[in-house]
Length: 227
Length: 227
DNA sequence: CCTACCGATCGGTAGG
DNA sequence: CCTACCGATCGGTAGG
Image (cartoon, rainbow over all chains, first blue to last red):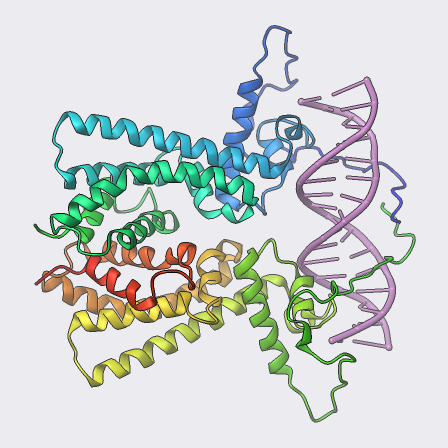
């Protein structure tokens, strides 16, 4: 039955200082009672998890990796999240809420100037590239490429948020279709367009060639026909 | 040091008959000496692995899953492949070779009729959807979505094949660009178009709504402008 | 190709 | 949140 005869010889020490060395001071400081930063530690875990899930994938990232990245011991993430899957879900939910918020803000700015449908689409596409490829953009890629690991229950709550996000796109695409500037079936066009944008996560390199504005211009030129 | 005191109580028996029950007869038949089907067993492993890697992902698929799917014991895949990663690489290589071959054949047929660039692009897109979504299409999705698990050395041999595959697209896209039917920068357009097509793996459902011809028509309408 | 394993690692937990 | 674990599983191997 697999008896454990002795304690592990080298138990769960965070592998000495690989990345982000000076993250926290040496003897990790005891919290004074009125310094509860519960939400903060939770947020730190979510951010570290997003980064690691993005770089290595969900299955290839251990909860020990995540703990080490924020200076915790291996068991401690489970004080904040009841499972690794719950942490994944939190990453995705946070990513979607933030993406929706940014999209809403971008659209508000747009309404103050022109209401040209083509221009609004440009805003939406540019914001999407930002969320996918901009600085700190680990959350949405994780959400796009790791959803297989979700439970069905977790998935529904995210599909809801995705619906909210996409809701802003449909009327614009329909307006462009009516104006003859978007020729394909609107529903399929939306799926194909999202694919074109989302796939950029696989090939875009910040340090090389094109800027996010270049990408936006290319996408518009590709999808939108002359009136 | 973790002593193993007794043999596993339930050692590696393929979990009783879940999928593909009648795969091989009960007492698996001993091979007579002149019935070497080495290549066959290897192919079976590659196909089973493609299916499982596609459905569950590389990390979430165990070599035991794969062995069980072809009626082998847990250690036996390593007689054919020196590692799980080598099996993944074999899946991808097989997928690319087959995709290139199908693309070449499709183009040969096309040349016999019209040489209209738009028509050739339709052939290429339709073939791509076939390879991504048609029957038996597990290989290319695995190659697209699991390449993170490859070693750098394995990756280069595949990038080469991908280059061969894409080589057929570039002159067509350039011709369409010159003719004013493709407005975006050709290099970015190619990446965006591939994204639109490849992403269909995430949402397309054989049993619902659109056919592969519908998808092809929508993609053409989306990307190609009037002359 | 099977038998019989091994060492490593992983998600998670009880108790403080 | 840490300490000190556990049971399960995994990729892989020696020997036939």
